Image (cartoon, rainbow, N blue to C red; front, side, top):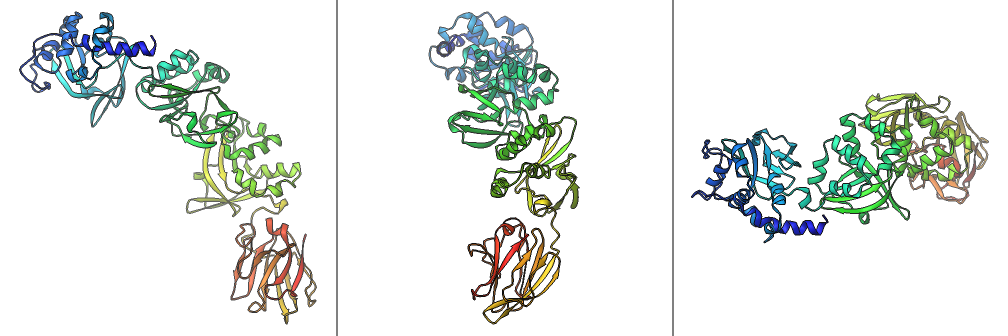
Length: 575
């Protein structure tokens, strides 16, 4: 029966319902309650005593259902006359007796079910054969998500009546929802079976609005039916509700990249480009915007799995913010290693933005250097943030080179530079922590910082306004001619230095690049003044500047100069 016919049928239901319980009415205008109903009266007689079920009684009597309602123990969700009046005029007259009987019995349950026996949410099988969804809270009882019980527990000798404010309609007489639409499509039988097994059918029939990313039968077959069958009830519910969003989201509302929270509380990662919509990096929407009464369906070619069901590679692949990392791991043939089900890993995963920040350096690395850098982000054990002490050094897969992990006021940092932005993405073989900077191994000028320990102290003085002189070098990794005007200063990459300027008051010290751009300045205006790798520290009272010669500073520094006197300038060579 198509939607138009169903709607026409709906217009026919009213008049026949109006004939349902044709019996005498009491002189009272209100709905009886448990306190004022004669316990000797059966359901029909109890309804007769009220003045608010006339249409229902008329229809039931005409259909020959009165004797059943008088003799069997039943629960009746009884639409009031006002509920029938809300239906389109002439609707009941257009229905056959068989159709009307289906509708009437859809309001009836076998046995006595009082309102205090209804749980927060449960299904109930009607005498018509279909299920209804019952929900109970402090505000009362609701049926099928929208119909309210306006007077509960009207006791009768053979059961109970609950007065409701709407006429309930079986599936054949209402517009198709998510479940009915999926059934009509015919391509989601495995999904529908799983939804039924998880007890979610009536939720997706009557509640919403929802957005459902619906895996096809082929998608389930690709995953493996045995995998689905092996899931516990809780796991099955977790997987299924991971495909559902609260609210209706058509494809036209999607952004190029967005993260949305599914009903199970986990994130889905959606991208939109000229090729269409992708979910979690590898699932494609092949049929979008299937509209239903209570939401929208987007058919996908892959079963979407929460993080708990994926390894660290799977969980990185689904996150578009980690695409650069995934590409590099794939290029360096590390994906198979990190997907090993028999191993455990912790991956500190830099974002795309973190890799972009070192893109110029990354382009200069050899393949081995890229591999070593990637392995410098991986531990050979699973370490969640709650397992961390305040400070610890742990070995990575990069030839056992260590990183320093510190926790301060709930913030996790690595090597004093990178900060964990999202922690504890736990999968089947380990955990991912997303970080905001790329970790650089010691061989490439990074490694664990030296806690500010200075490798060399360099003391300089001015010769009037014409030149610098190096007075003294104390420590390792620095050299230059003592007492020579504007002597070349040779430094080692990766070391930390303190320069003491004896004439700081009148001759502010600066470091320049080869284009005379200021990198670090005593006045605090250098382009790398706040660079985390350089870790610049100024002490105006002592006239000192301390810095670590690494990263951008090591790549760019070319000279030292006085801010006010251009003749006071000497070269810097970095080894």
